[in-house]
Length: 431
Image (cartoon, rainbow, N blue to C red; front, top):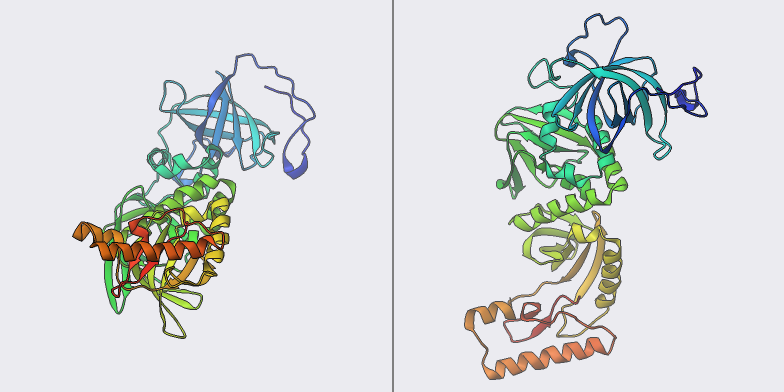
């Protein structure tokens, strides 16, 4: 093992100017760091207590190993000289492998200063894999829990360096059947990953509760409020006894800042749920109130709404959160939306206002009565000649007006042409 200086460096980390490699056995650098669960032992522990009876075990990365030692990386500093037990997952040819050893030295990781490298002597050991002493009571994820997390798509979406910090920060919660553990309208400061059981999503609207979805093992629940910043949009009630792992808002925000892929993964979940639910909670968007869903598209969801003060009906188009998380797309969308808001032509849908809330953009437009040309053609097959000519002429007038202002629609099709009952045509969705 490397020599070490018995002085304490900055932050209490034992370090020395240079390390001299005096290993007797060859140490193998692992191509991918392995996850390990570490428990510190006290010098007085003649017989180590059960894992569930001691302090919360801590997840670390194993970077290389030999017959007599390990190199660990941790976000927590451990004092040299302390003995430990370690359960390592995924060493070549093994599932979980158990070790006992002692921490010899600790120093900052030169590649990642927020991490600490730990040089340890270690030898294979025989002891049962750790688990909770009392079913349903856990201080943190045990090996069986980590094996569950490996099947959850979210763990595959986050950066490998973020796995141990996530495992060390989540907290266990047991929820009994029938418990309403998320309430509509409350501030959301935590989200959950369901390990076992199922829950239903209940939307309270006009003094009635509507079941709008079911969330099962391996899925997120409560992430929408953390991602968008708005209050809880529905109640969530356990259908049976459930085991949950909670992620606090602080940890959630840290993950979003450190790894953009996390935001992409979660916004896709939110967008899918927004798009699949027929009902939505009434929500205040600036001067406007969203009431229910009118339609869905590739980039946006359109809601029915009203101006809160004027009681004027409007359509409110919300840019899907997975698109709003793309800075370049968002900047272009914002610029073009403001340009289109300046158009004023009888054959172009009128944009009244733009609101930026809940990490996305809402475009407030006139609410139209009628159907799209696509819906009409699907029903009747084709239009009479005189009606078809009228549609084409009106569309050309609207496009000419936009072209004179250097705006090109880019997506003219029957689905983007709206037919009013009186025959007037409105062009939708300038792209």
